[in-house]
Image (cartoon, rainbow, N blue to C red; front, side, top):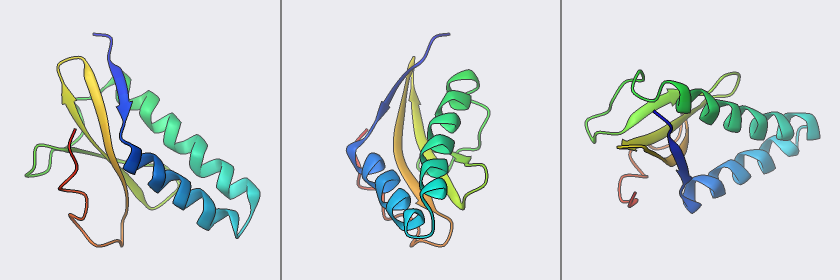
Length: 99
């Protein structure tokens, strides 16, 4: 099946926030966060139903190299990226987001 991807504005803002934080360490790390985010989405498109679901019917994909999970929902042929969540950030802050 061919899946389309929609990224919520809040999730994009979280990517930019992560890029900014890592950018204070180095430009390369900042760029790597962005690259890994989009590589993760590419992997999700290939196998969107293989990642574990949370209680809120949201799936969780652990991003390579960085301490983040991509949270997403699959609705027929659409993958909605809801959040980029840091492993140590307050859990469930994203639950009010509409997808």
